[in-house]
Length: 312
Ligand code: C5P
Image (cartoon, rainbow, N blue to C red; front, top):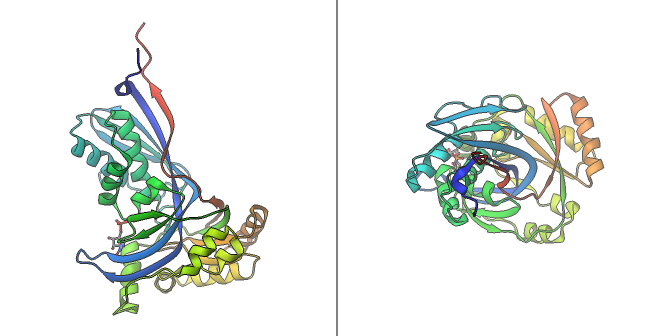
């Protein structure tokens, strides 16, 4: 007999964090969101969402970066599960366990990865079988970075960052990520950016960046890394200027604030170079933790699906 997907009892989905290779910010739209032109790259730090069939909805958060992630109804993974249930009319619930590997409130879209993973996990667990573009529509309702966490790899984002087109990118890039214990609020960083830029033009990506991605060479890509939010993030957290300066004294090819910060992402020429830079930055004591990662990696994907044992 064909296996019945409704009989799945547990699904585990893994979704990556991201860095913005370029983040260009423009004016706010009618809803108050900024128009963006950005290039995302998914990197090898992951959120694993374990979903089990349950009567209601609940969530627990584990892992080394569980920090300040809410375990209540405001949790974005739980909101994702509820949104999928509401829009498909299923009457199942789910218990979610989030194993965090992406820094919390770090500008690497860990919460967005949770939401993307929860959508894919519950869709399989409940057998709702939505197409990827239907999941992407729900993802965009949950947050501007959630659609990218579904697709992963390297992509150009426009609109709020939620309208995606794959980028033609070659090669593998090695990143060093300097984390801070205390996160930065994304709305606060955007508000500071508004104060610094009262009448911004429409955002545009520089064409050299697309050619650099195609070349696959980290040395070339390094010349085109850019983040319009960096100044605002450094204003709110002056220590980030010191972290950037510390990277400038290493063999890092370039360093930028990741998204709205406070994580600083530095590009290294090779994997061993990344590990060496990480050791130097760790010894400098300016970061709460220093990790290495590589990109691009794929978006949310199923890593485990457990079926109910047949009754004997
Ligand atoms: O979409 P998400 O919930 O991740 O966004 C968090 C906050 O970041 C928004 O409430 C908004 O203040 C800010 N934001 C923005 N423009 C964007 C994306 C996010 O102003 N394109």
